[in-house]
Image (tube, rainbow, N blue to C red; front, side, top):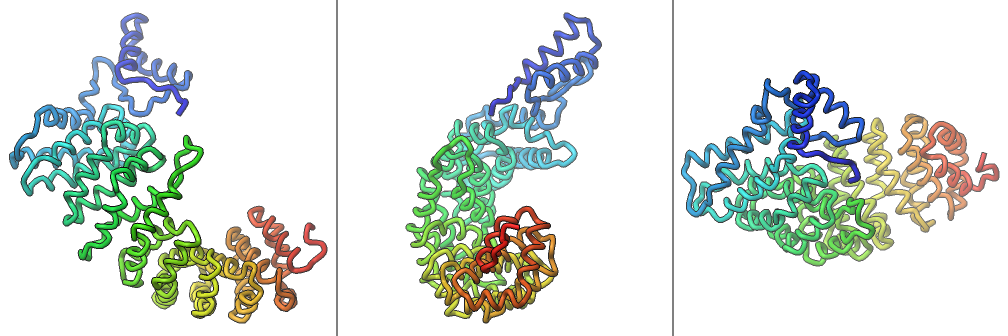
Length: 467
């Protein structure tokens, strides 16, 4: 935020002065301008560098694309666009999207936003919104896809906010409830614009984006609007470093009260075969911010559904689904009543079985260990059941097999600690299985788990736990 910037005009003037006032050759003038500005710490992203007399910024394909779009934007769209205009505008946005996504020209997005692409695209979006006729979707989707790519940093999110972008997008989404492609492209813009910008999140909430999200989730369409789930997660993530106290916790409660948590839980019931299972699980985890919401999810069958999905993911070898479902279950297990529910439904057995099926993947195993450590926290009865289910053996086998998997080793130490701290019988069993040596090895080899290893050794009743 404190980096100095320069406009394209000022940069071009500097190069011109080098030529006209200092008598430099055009290529030397450009090189000198770049070198001087870099030494001064000036941010040159988005600046088009042209050798005077040899090329012009208008030769840049991004600028050429924007200039043509500006010609359309300068015309007030009061009636339906001609088919040839629709085709050209659509192709221009497709080209702009391709240019900005090009790996060979990674600076194109910065160039586009530096030259007003966000404002221009929002302006065209606002005119598309009021243009009658079914053909408008030929522009809407390419336009929104381009806008989602253009919004990539705090400057572009602020540009989006300043040109009433949130209102424009919510309007387009409201008019596209039956069109999955438009919804997906629109919610991608919501996610991009809300990333790292608390004020934009607030703007969307004031425009009742939550009600729109619920409306889309309740559609009978079987087509998944993937960007919808991304938008939920971003809206509920406190990622604006400029803000001391984020409002997203309150937004999560609003989402839950409205019924979005219920709708997402129902979406999970489609099971492992659903292409929305992973996205819906991640979104639901973002909403589950307190004990009340976690319990409400369990009350409508959320834990039953997750345990079934965990079983199915193990049988089908779906590691991604296994990890994400475990991650959500660990969040729900933060509620004491849910811990008991998981144990009563033989969740510990299912989790151990999952870890055995994915015994070659420490990422799955560490998720299982995290849930078990949460379930055993402050509960000696749950800790006893965890040992009976095989959690002790899991810790020994995994710590031996993956000595450098630091996060898994850390989760193992925390799980051991919670199984041992209030259960003397568990301490005896774990120590007899050689867990002390494994913990000390983890402590010596992995800085990430040193504190957890020390705590585990202490709660196992060992005197020299600091060494």
